[in-house]
Length: 234
Image 1 (cartoon, rainbow, N blue to C red):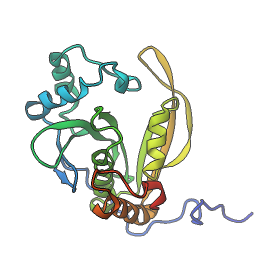
Image 2: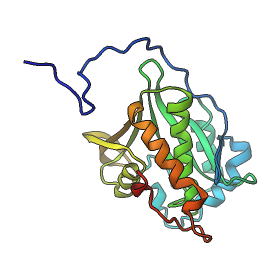
Image 3: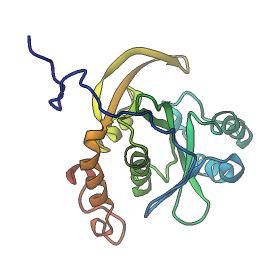
């Protein structure tokens, strides 16, 4: 029987020459045209984050997160201090390009520098950030750090299999569906089957080009509406 190959035509278990463990992501800012990311800092970002997430009066953004909604800014501060100040997960606040108003959070987590794999997750997108150019560019900037700056091999996205919005977002951003881990965990008193998605380093150059085309100012009308959807720019 001949050697088995993956979907890229590579033999399964092929040798990787000169591989070395990668650096772990540093808590350093990232800047784009429409947004910037800064290491999450409760002292700097708490009040604007609380204002942004509080706009979700029905608490829908917390449905598929293991924490929240929070009853007060003090409770949110306690959560940030206990969760957002470490190295893994490494949290970033997502801000508009000017000023210090934070609109959401995102993190690198389950960082495997030896194997070159890393996950993006723990996303808190306030109503103002949801379905915005800022949110898309923030995800692009984090991808660029992982692949272009750090040289990782694999970038992961995982979510509750029932979270249709998160699954659509993963596919729109270029992640490929890998399967369902059944009964992966329990949170908020209910079962979670986890949907797994990934991007590989071999797929990054084409995705990088598509993000750049989509983010170019010529792709947007004067009122900010996109001319060509991201999925069609690939």
